[in-house]
Image (cartoon, rainbow, N blue to C red; front, side):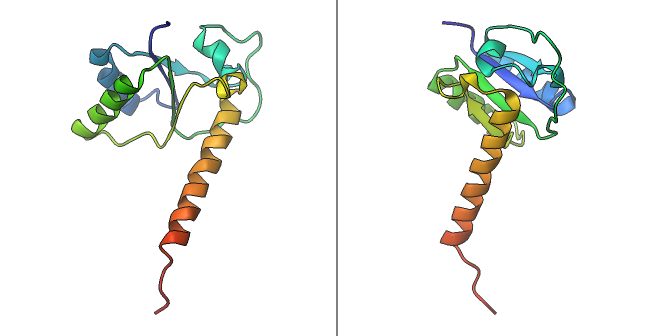
Length: 132
């Protein structure tokens, strides 16, 4: 099994540094994903491959986190660490799966945004606003 790794998008800033510090004591390796690598399939990214040519398409500015080879218990500890240290969550997060390993970063981002919107719509439908 490979080293558990957290891939961080748009977190090359003080907030990202704080997240990287949360990962260290848990034995989680972190990697900042540059926009040039957005076209690389996630499975190849996790394998440490570099793109043959830099990604030139549209990117995204949302923070995103992808966990690779991270057992459930370790994921739980990471999320607990976010709460315990009062670090706001990264809203777009995923675990690398057999299904999404062939996707590139942009495709994963789009899917996570769709899922997030579906959850919001479901919550709104379950708790409709009463007319005044």
